[in-house]
Length: 173
Image (cartoon, rainbow, N blue to C red; front, side, top):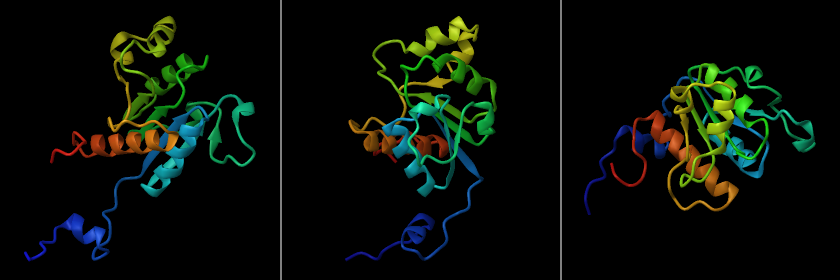
């Protein structure tokens, strides 16, 4: 049996050292959906402050908290990650345009990477420049074969953690 070598991450995992304190970080999910509910739930455990942007109050359940109607009200800053959780909504272009205009660390949109996303036309129709449109990541998350809202949320958050730590994700270290 070999001696167990402790490093800082191992010590944190075993409870032998406190977790490092990161800068405050915020996760903004745009549009209420089963995936956004899972995403915001898991993000809390990862130390994010969470905000849901939902312009249509009829899409909300009775117990949803932390909801704002506009991206401007979400309080974007350089530590904010924005995830658009529905690419079929009519408000997509305007909300993405507003997110691109704000200070954000990262913006991503769910969707199939095998064809152009509907956000491209929606943003162009609003006069958003192509270099700004290119800031929208698509697809989002790590490629783990996600199929359920919870799996998509886990893959998305893992991708955000990898990106924040300048890592490729996956099993290569």
